[in-house]
Amino acid sequence: MVDDRETKAALDVLQSGILTDASYKGGKNVQEFERKLAGLLGVKHAVAVNSGTAALQTSLMAYNIKQGDEVILPAFTFEATANVVIACSAKPVFADIQSDYTIDPEDIKRKITKRTKAIIPVHLYGYPVDLDEIREIAQANSVPVIEDAAESLGAEYKGRQTGNTNDAGCFSLYATKVITSGEGGAISTNDDEMADKLRMMRNHGMRDGYDTRILGYNYRLPEMAAALACVQMDKLLGFIEARRRNAAVLNDAIAGLPGVSMRQTKTDRKNIFYLYTIHVDGQRDKLHDMLRAKGIGCSVYWRTPVNRMELYRNLGFADLDLPHVYDAVDRVLSLPVSPAVTPEEIDYIATELVAALKEV
Image (cartoon, rainbow, N blue to C red; front, side, top):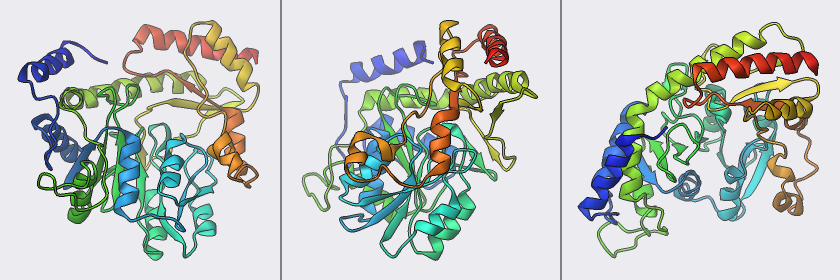
């Protein structure tokens, strides 16, 4: 949600005349956003970039992922998670998921090889993956864990924020994310050398003026976007509280109803409900259409797993054995619980959801 505070922040940048900053450290607002983000996550470094995709790609580049390397990731995610692997000329290795839609550590074990150079778990819908198990596998095989935390800013796993890592945590500031700067992203890490590489990579590989030292691109976050992100950071805890409050209403509504479940409920982690996603055993698409007809903005994320997108189908990934992924694409339905949803609206959504579930 955006109000007069973001408007003022944007005007302040316009009036300053400093719309971006190509220095190694970035501009005043970039540095302020990075300080706030690092403080929230409890890490030494946060490096702002201009998208969540840029965050993932620069993290892979910093670990020198290249042709011949393999990167393990879930097939049930937004395609950017896999696209960045292809962009580094590496091979995505698609893993199955568990019943809560998070990547299955046992399938990671089955698919890890000497060619595996990174693992990218996705904290889908704002719900953390089994980080301890995944990190144990990664450490045993000497590979980094690059967390795709695009949807999980503020979520916790065993008392630690997602993105609190010695490797890399990648966040998105896209318009629909937990907080937004319109477009934007960031990488978190406790690794000094990693942070140094990332700061150069976002700025054509430069550190002191025109002195390109490593391969990089223009992935800088503009000052206006950073200013918006700073304001949004101050609202984050309120946003999360509102999401959880709305999710609790839906949890109460579906409790005990047959054929429907909320599966992201492990007690050792704190869900921020970026998307409130239910598992529908029956006619999911009919339920979707009924709710849309009532003006409820429900959606399916995702109807097609990444390995069956046209690009990846053409690359030979379509026939992979991923039974839980294929079950999820037929069963999941996400309902709106964003801070913009009022108490009256969430009560309406809950009432119509129950009625529709009973009918289908």
